Amino acid sequence: RTEALLFGRFTYQVMAAFWPGVTDPANPAATQLNTRPKYVVSDTLADADATWTNSTVVRGDVLSAVRELKKQPGDELQIHGSARLAATLHAAGLVDVYRLLVFPVTVGDGKRLFDPQAPATGFRTVSAETMSTGVTSLVLEPVPFSAGGVSIVDSQVEIHVN
Image 1 (cartoon, rainbow, N blue to C red):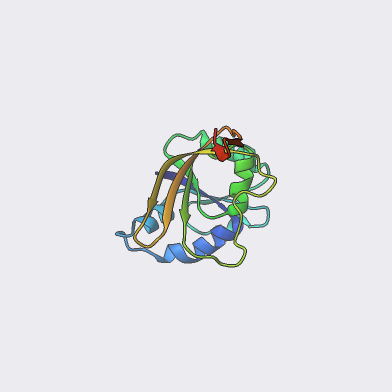
Image 2 (image 1 turned 90 degrees about the vertical axis):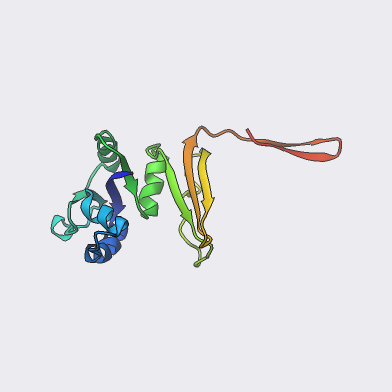
């Protein structure tokens, strides 16, 4: 569903070191990643270092740049990895859909997609699927946050989710 890809500098450099070498036309991931326009958000990456095909460095006012990219016709502008960039876009209300892959492993502290300062957000689960490998695929759409509550009725705890 992607029309273009958006990366933070670190994720871009990791992906750009690998994917251009995957040239099998039968590999749909490589085909999408190698042919689609790529935008890398960085104040330190030189234009000359953005050598992966169809790459553009985005500097300055990232939120305005992303708003303009979202206005382009076509399918989705997707972020792959880039947790800090995703959190910034979440805080600005610029994420329309989250497509998350949750792997059944832990690696140290891990990265947080939603930091403690992130705005409260509710989500509507569009789909959830556990694959044969144990990976869970979630598609979530942001919705306005609504707090629930807890009450005790006839000695029974009731949890209310709005």
